[in-house]
Amino acid sequence: MKTIGILGGMSWESSAEYYRLINEGIAARLGGSHSAKCLLYSFDFHEMEALQTAGRWEEATGLMIDAALALKGGGAQFLVIATNTMHKVAAAVEAAAGIPLLHIADAAGEAITQYPYKRIGLLGTAFTMEEPFYRERLESRYGLKVLIPEKADREAVHRVIYKELVAGKIVPESKKEYQRIIGSLIASGAQAVLLACTEIGLLIKKNDCTVPLFDTTVIHAHAAVEYALES
Image (cartoon, rainbow, N blue to C red; front, side, top):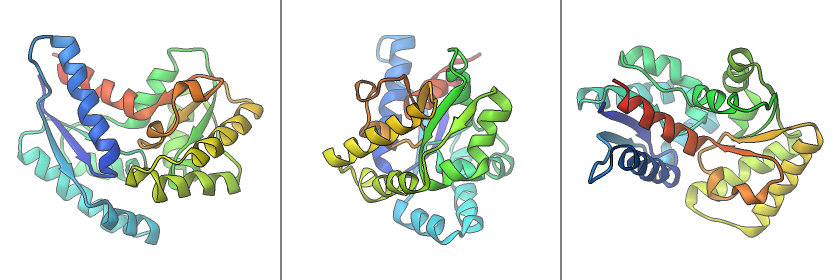
């Protein structure tokens, strides 16, 4: 079994889900008392959020690289960034660390292409929805058409993530708002919806949507299990 290096704490709420899902996955695959070999570097998300909001991505990249090197030094054999947004700097982190990085958009793309869906609605932070680093990877590598909400709805999705979900707040009115936004994506032709923020799965479940949901937290954790157990 390979040792997994998890870059987490962005937020700790979703990182806790990663830890649970990865260990459950290893136990299911190997049985008995098996659990994952993993190292977790957990950021103070307040500091990382401030850098994101200020557009200070170079500084954020430096922090991510330092953490990745610490994980490598501790014995990690590959990396998992336990958040979608910080995959904006994934290439730089992987290059500096010198060990493989399991990209969350690749895990999502591979999961979606097991089905006949071509038009995918995407929910995430404003960075993930609006910038090309995520959408273009899904489109160019996996032949998907990615649909995002209208501007006001993107702002609502982003606000709920940063003001509620990262603090573990589950607000019924926000769930209804997300369901309305998902309905708009479906009306625009989305055949499935990708929850491209690792906190959204805390709020939206499969029964809350009339089309299939792909939760990147679950998908990425499963991919980490598979990669850890590959010979």
